[in-house]
Structure formats: C-alpha cells, structure tokens
Length: 353
Ligand SMILES: Nc1ncnc2c1ncn2[C@@H]1O[C@H](COP(=O)(O)OP(=O)(O)OP(=O)(O)O)[C@@H](O)[C@H]1O
Ligand SMILES: [Mg+2]
Image (tube, rainbow, N blue to C red; front, side, top):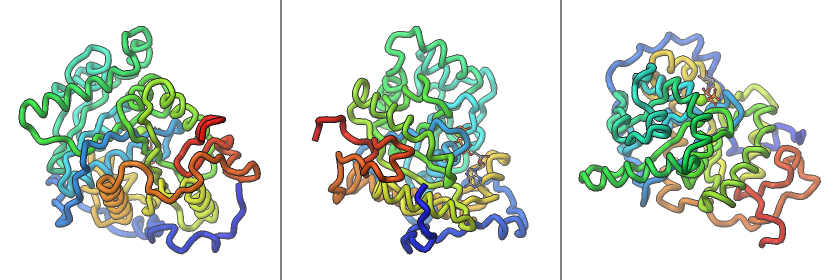
C-alpha cells in the first residue's frame, strides 16, 4: 500500500464527519422511535428513470446492508419511492427495515425459485413514507443451489422486476425511483441475478486494508457479466464506509480509492459510529434511530449526492481522460486490482480502445 503521509489526503477528502464513536458512547442513548422518520423539508430530485442498483462486495461485513437500508430510508424520507430487495439469506436488510421475515413469510426465495410475483411479497416499511422491501427468509439459502438447474437461472430477478414495474404502470401506481438490491457476501447465483437485473453497481468499501483485497475478483466478475449477460452493467458508485478518523490507514485507503476511482467515489464518507451498529437491533435504520447522529447525516449526504447524480447523468461524470487505460504497472493500486481498474471502474479488454 502506498505510504503517503496523512497530510497528502486532499482537504476535501472526508466530508467532515469525524469518527464519533467516543462522543456517541458518552452520550445518552436516543429514545427509539416508533413513529416514521419525519419527512425532511428537502426533496431530492427524481431520477429520469428508475435506477436499479446492486450493492455488492463479496467481502463480508463491509457495510452492504447498512448502506442499502440507510440510503433507502434517506431517499424515501426525501420524497422518493424506494424498493429494497433483500437477496441475502441472512435477512439483515429485512431486519433493519423492521420487516417480518420469519420462515414461511413469502419473500425473494418464492420470487426467484417458485416464480411468485414480486408484488405479492413486497411489504411496506413503517419508518419512511414510500419505502418498500421484499424480504429474505432463511429459505433463500437453498435458492443458490436450486437455481443451478433452472431455466434462465441468471435472469429470474430481472424478469420479476420487469413484471413488477409493468404491474405498477398498469395499475396506475407511482413509479419506483430507486431499487436497491442487498447482496450476500458471495459471488454466487443470487449476486449474479442482481448484476443482471441492475445496470448500476454500488460497492461499499470499508476503510481497512483487507477490505480492498477481494476487489479485483469482484471487478473481474462484473466484467464477465458485462461481456456475457448484461452489457449495461457499470460500477457507478463507491461509498467508503466505517471511516475511523483516528487511524492513518483509513486516510490512506480513502486517498488510494479516490485516486483510482475518481468521480465514482461519493464525496461523503461514512464514519464508524456506534449509533449505526445499534440501530438494527431496534428494527430501524440509523436514519430513524438517531437521525442527527454523524452516521445518519453521512448517509443522508451520500443519498443526496446519489440523487443529484441521478438527474445529471447515470454514468460517471465526464473528465476522466484515462478511461480505458490501465493504471501504470508501478501503481500500488494494481496490487489489489491486477491492473484492471480505470477511473471508470474496469479496464477495457486488451486491444479495445
Ligand atoms: N459505519 C459503521 N459504523 C459502525 N458499525 C457499522 C458501520 N457500518 C456497518 N456497521 C456494522 O458492521 C456490521 C457489518 O455491517 P453490514 O451488515 O452492513 O455489512 P455487510 O457487508 O452487509 O455484511 P454481510 O457481508 O454479512 O452481509 C454490522 O454489525 C453493522 O451494524
Ligand atoms: Mg449484509
């Protein structure tokens, strides 16, 4: 890893959400709410068309679920209609959104394996005005194996989502603005279904050294899906999570990720925060549990950035002249990514411009 001094980190690197762990631990716990998150006075712009984003990273515990539910809650609180698809048999997103997902509750297993309509399994979340979730039960663990022998095994989610949208349109119901798909920590058929269903990938990266190590495998898989199953797939958004301002390593990871992924990386970064980790045990996102905590404010800012990008352009903003050029061999980033990364995410194939 590059050993740049912390001072090398650009001034604007962290959007000034310092690590708040110590302060939060000293503070009195917030009173958990049972009422919905108050609608923020601010309204985020609606994307020109539904944005479907897969939140993926095969490394476990990097903040995929936390990111999915908090962005979803923030977007919904700002007036957008949001659907979370829980594709992880652990069902953590369903838990955090306060959605019933005990065995027997129809969820993503029934959709993917039994062909049930998404509309039949989607539940409305209490904490935000137009926030919906298709839950995952433990049954979904079996889907990974059962899907192997099924027809169109990689595109079953895509079809289910398309049918759902059609049904909403026919019923004259409001269009969904954002679909966020929470993936399990693996690159199996569940995650592949998400990559086929969504044009956009959001990768949460934990501000720790090891969090970067599996990235080349993730990017290789995305490239394979692009080539064979979904040419529109692109890594459009990277969110740095669990930033601990006290460590030099966290600042170095931020620096490296920003250097190599450029505008794909959201300016806001999410601090390590006790409130964020407490919220799921109350069946809430941190947006509802403690909306003024630094973690909630960071996710709100990240959601705002995403929403603003959604109306500008879906892909990475212009200006990245090095698209298609792999990083120089001496570049330390190549260590993690095998030289496959450009500022747009993935280097083009050899011989291609
Ligand atoms: N910014 C944060 N500060 C403190 N704790 C966090 C933060 N983000 C996530 N956590 C906690 O870290 C743990 C892992 O987070 P999360 O479940 O979101 O990761 P994940 O990538 O979805 O994990 P998995 O791969 O198992 O699905 C959880 O206990 C969560 O509450
Ligand atoms: Mg998870």
